[in-house]
Image 1: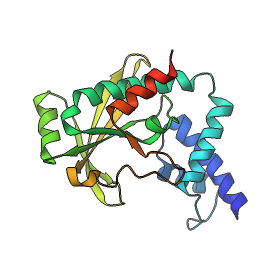
Image 2: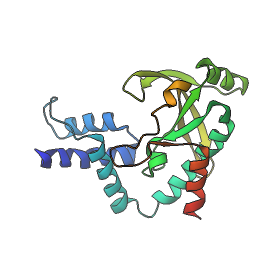
Image 3: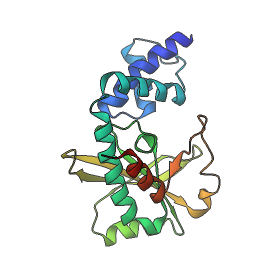
Amino acid sequence: MDDLKDELAAVAARMVVEEGLEFGAAKRRAVRQMGLPARTALPDNDTLELAVEDYIAVFCAETQPGELKALRGLALIWMERLERFRPHIAGAVWHGTATRHSDIYLQLFCDDPKSAEIGLIDMNIAYEPRTVTGLHGDPVDALSVHVFCAELEEHVGLHLLIYDLDDMRGAMRADSRGRRPRGDTAALRSLLHDVGP
């Protein structure tokens, strides 16, 4: 059974890297592509993330570091613009598995959940409101923006997940791999400077 989960993870990893699919969508599409029953047990996110790392190492080793740096640089610009909302970066751009097909996910911890939306309106930034699965599996409001990444010469999805300030408690606990699940502006800036050119 683990062999099947590993095979599913490998197929889903290609979709995550090459098409920018989110983990859940990639796993479901991998099941369909492999002709498996809809109720097939899926690999967990840690298994899929390891498969994504393997895929990048084999197929994208030359291009991915530059693409990741470009996305992190763009994320930093937006985190600095949104500093008053206590932005934290999460997902593939934070963990280092992002490619040019990846979106940027920023989590904003606001005194007033509506303040981020008002902030975007004040900056004349068009956004699309959505509801996504948040920190603890609960629905959370998100504001999605398309931003241009000059280094990649294409538009990138930027998703701002809106949290209450109280949600910050416990949000920095290490994940199952012992990593910080998100980082603030200083942490991202440090990552960018440590990597070098």
